[in-house]
Image (cartoon, rainbow, N blue to C red; front, side, top):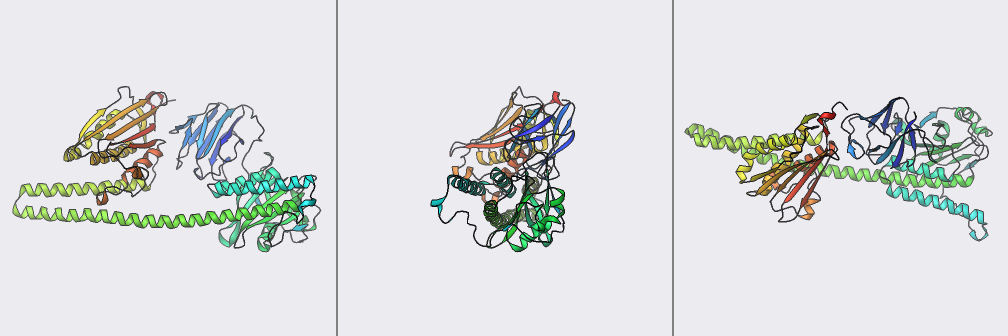
Length: 545
């Protein structure tokens, strides 16, 4: 029985990926069966194991997780026809049976750079070093078909420019631009190779094939390197008849009848080349096609330059944020150490005086500061690393009760009262208890600090229809100003001054999102604050499912 994935959202909408018997890798790495140009996907994100009985989906401990039918994937799951699979910004529909629709089945594209001996350089056409001019000087004498052709060229450039402005990642941009190129040019195979690594080697970064059965692209290294060195694009209308290509192994062996290779460059820098070819004797490239591809190469170069500038600015912002964070942490740690030094001095003084009450009071202060250090270290570890979820069956109601008991001492110091609203229909569920414990503990300690001598309410709810667990932690404190609500989950942002690190809520959000859940806040100045954690879960009786 044929099985396949159809893309319904993201890059290559409408493409269909055939699933072969055995493991089918999904991710950004080109070793996968399904290659994604998606910055939210991991290199080896997920795997679908296909056999005669159907398919089983497994998330490979990816950074951002996977979702099936809008539910986070916690363990291997058997797929049913019609299931939706979300990986990053890409959404697939799993289907069984013969693929239908206009799109050809898409599989992995392999780019091979042939080290051939193409030395006789007699091109059909070169692009000039100057600005590409696709419009004639006198447009009044153009015929209808010529005007239609120019309109198509200008429309293509407009589409490429639009892609440049909205593409989130470089790989997404290159893949999308190649699709646009294939809409107007008679290319059968195309690839983008960028200069990278030692010696400015040409590294494949994007590829596209018109025929799903033709998923290997052979690029002449000599031709590509000559375009890099000369900075000019080259065209052959019939590569098999062109003297300069005859000795090229990739041209002769693979029946290439027409090929173009143009630089991806601006006036300031050359980034790589775009290569297109076709084996059709009737659909060959023209000088106008070469001019269009050269213009597209320039647009791509400008986009790459912008991406690089953005990364440089982002790196500068990251360094500035790290410096600010280190300064804030240093100040916080210094305050704790000063308090510990004072408490240690008081302990020694009380011992010398035989003051038992003084010893107990100083020891409590020392113990409190030790707890602050421990809390800081745990938060930093939770925020800086992503451990694999450790799922186990537990009672969410019991967890909520245990956490409230754990912080009662802190609540008593502030005069805070607790109210519990536990869902009696809550079953035992499979969940990462340790991560949830850490996330809820941060919310409870914040709620106590905010409520003061007010009330903190803890509520649990079970959504049986969607198999989701909800926890709500509400306080009667002063609320959070609207401007702060947008940044309270940012790392190292705190409203507690030197009493806080700004890691608690950032850690909570990270832990919850790592488990495929969400955390949201509702607050009004003077009206208290409510945090809600919502997590996917599995019932105990489904362990063997």
